[in-house]
Image (tube, rainbow, N blue to C red; front, side, top):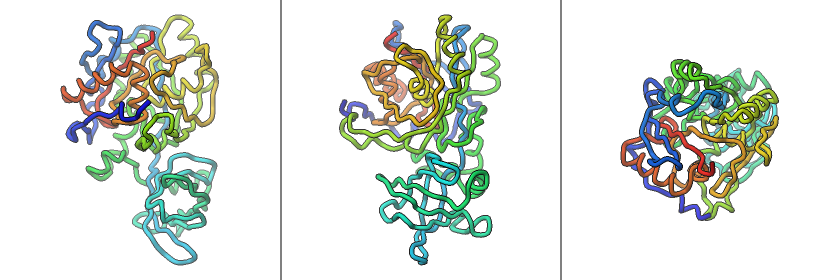
Length: 361
């Protein structure tokens, strides 16, 4: 499909720079292609009223790490140039893939000393070698530290990698360390938050428990590739960046049991949806799964396991707007976004949410 079919105009004032307080007071646009009125306006705290006892919410419990690193590039013993690197996928105890700026000037074999304002940490040590250079500024970094020592160093000198549409308007601050993390984050490794989950509070969890709604957790470490624009003119020519995750055997069995008794699988966020759809077979059975997924969902995709999706509002021409268009229908989602823009919904990571029913059910 042509990528420009997924374009729309979004006024700057619709981009949220801070989350709603409390989190579950954010607005919720319910999109049901089968209802007489496909669009209805609510709040996130109303979520239990749209679910049934026996339904299961699937959350992504990945935890955002301070993966934005600033450093100085050295080459042939000569010092150097300021470099910014956003880690996006771990390859091993000491190796990460990252997006580096300025990417064109970086070469394989370069040494980069990361730290606060170019200063060193751990007596001159958060150092890395550029092991490999890919496309669009992507590099493979081999750090001198490994395992827990590397994790501690990244935590000490790294910054929360705010999405570019927020970072362009204000700097990261201490509030973001809490705001840009779900209350159930557990498995470290993401460089971007699974933002639909940011709306959940202990009070909302209690209301869902009272309504008989199950909660299950999977892990997909969200990468910085989620913010990259689609530069191709046709969706067939776009290459997704890989993200690693897993679905345990226990969770797979529990979700299959939900489906078997007539309950619905409701994914909180596109990340958990992409992971569940990666783990599902053609029959819809969810299998234990671990690895990297580059699943790219566009209109025409046949959903195998997921029945409903709660998600924020996404960028124009983005793979995520393509995904929601596949889920609830191309025309329906264009109408939903027009409604959201005209009625003051807040967009993107810190913005409001939508609850989508699947079109083909």
